[in-house]
Amino acid sequence: MRRYASFTSFAVFGAGLIGIPIARELRTRGASVLVLTRPGCCPVTARQKLHPGIEVFEVDYNDSVAVAQALRGHGVEVVISTVSVAEVTVQNELATAAKAAGVELFAPSEFGVGAAEHLGSINLPFARFYAGFYIETIPALTGFKVNGKINIVGYGNKPCSFTASCDVAGSFVAHVLISLSPEELFNRTFRLQGDRSTLADLAAAFGTPVEYVEEVPGRMSEVWTRMQMAAECGVASTGWDVRQWGEGEEYAGCTNYLWAGHEWMTIEAFYGL
Image (cartoon, rainbow, N blue to C red; front, top):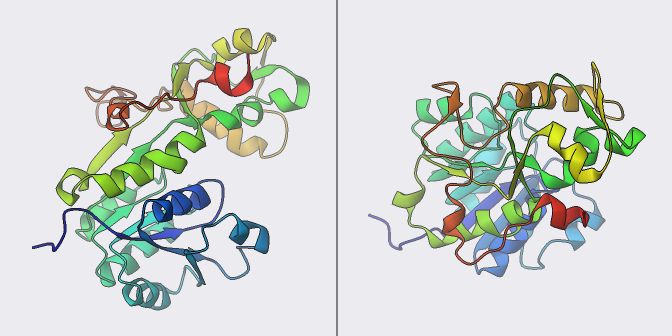
């Protein structure tokens, strides 16, 4: 039997685009927050963006014993992973360490392939947050920042969910993790959506032509090309159900209501279109 109705102690793995605002918002809302980073991966500039009441602890993510000791020593109830989506093995190891430390809930990185299956296998409840593409990544995702065009791999005609990171990390994640009871969080998927568009329709929004390409131009070309290929299959919609390989009964943005009164950032508003 829990002594309280909601969680109050959190650990965030990673101090980047998503990790920092999540940690900051949790602390602002009165929670105890521990940020765990790899040695040397949280420079002074990153630490300055965190709330002064947040402790930063450096640990080798591959050292499960050290990770478990850190979590147990700080009485962490909920772990939020913001590690790279490519680090599936690392995320699973963090989950195993969290389970050993007595953590009650694990929130994996979105698109963490196999995360839910692993969490189920070790009997550690999860809370998954699906946000689609972050709105601020559009210029890189489409190669727009390279040639001023919307570069598309495939047809670009499948609807995609777009959500601003400030909406996801800055408030929604912290809001539901603190305000909802454990029973309302356990093994639940939160499907968010700030805006919805096909990649091809972005060209009209930005007033620029479509360029059909074999790979997205620019830095991290392989990553963005892979993301577009996923979108081509429809999985970039937060309503996508992998089990039935199509839009599910839990539609894109169906949990936006949990943040009552919030005006979600749109693509047009973000870029002043």
